[in-house]
Image (cartoon, rainbow, N blue to C red):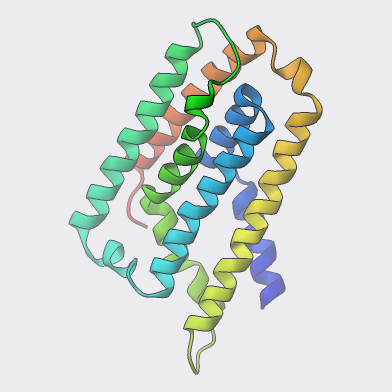
Length: 200
C-alpha cells in the first residue's frame, strides 16, 4: 500500500502545475535559495491541506458550494495577479533579487497551494483510497501525508539543483526575461484552467 501510494504521489507531484512554474521561475531568477524557499512554502501549503483533510475539515469544501467557490475565486485571483506581475517584470531590467523581497518566494509557494481548492479535494479524495477500512484512520492519513510531503520536497529539490548547475547560462538577462514571460503565461493558463474546472 505504501509503495503504491508513493509511486502515485510521485506521478502527481511531477505533473506540470503552478508549483513547478513558480519554483523553477524563482530558482532561475532569484537563485537556488529562492527556489528552495518557494518549495518549502509550497510544502507548507500542502501540509495545511493534508492536515485539514486528515481532520475532516476539507470535507467542507466538498459539501459546501459557497466555501469551494470562495476559495476557488481567491485562488484564481492570486494566480492571475502573479501571472500579470511576472509578465510586467519581463520588460524591466534584470538584476539580483533584492534582499527585502527574499521572503516573497516562500509566500508565493505557500499561498499558491493554500488557496488552491483542487489541492484540498485531492487530499480528500486521493488519500482515503489508501486508508484502512477498519480501525483508526488518522495515524495512517498523517503518515501518508508526510510521505507525500517528503516526495514533494525530494522532487523539487532535485529540480532546483538541476537549475543551479546551469545557473550561469540560464540567468542571463534575456533568458530571465523569457522565463518571466513563460511563467506569467503559464500561471494565467493555470488560473483559467482552475476557473473552468468543476468541483470533481
